Length: 199
Image 1 (cartoon, rainbow, N blue to C red):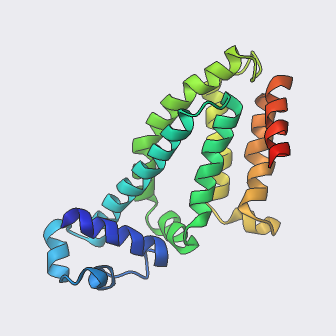
Image 2 (tube, rainbow, N blue to C red; image 1 turned 90 degrees about the horizontal axis):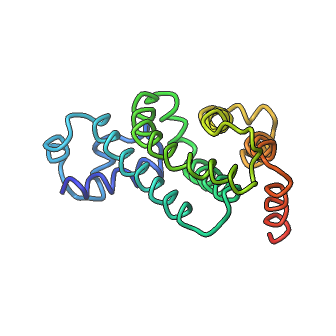
């Protein structure tokens, strides 16, 4: 029952946002009482914490699939962050607005528990990119990764993109992709160009 509550609650949070959802509204499709929910979770925040763990575990597993693809390091890096952007902005914006503004510590904890693992997974990709000549030989992967994370967070953790009256995708292209292009050798830039030509 606990797993079913988490599954339904996550779907409802993603569909309607967090603040507007009460425990009564969350359990409605399950046909159970709020007492049953409180048997497993002390509060809405504890339930949300479990939901975020499921959400970010799913995203992490999608990243693993991308890492196992036969793409080159440049395209893997861009695919992971583009895929994440699609998830962030493909869901109800109320969900991420509520998460960023009212529950940032829960979001940070959920991301933080996987961030280290994702960073560990991406370091070999960046190192391989340097070794195979896709990224500049003087690139320091840990600094490059930190830079990408800061730029990505500036798009997803605020509504700042609205001041430019454009989409998050355009902002991604002008921030994260430009940054990644700056990391690339001619060989890496050709891979990005080839991928764009195939679209």
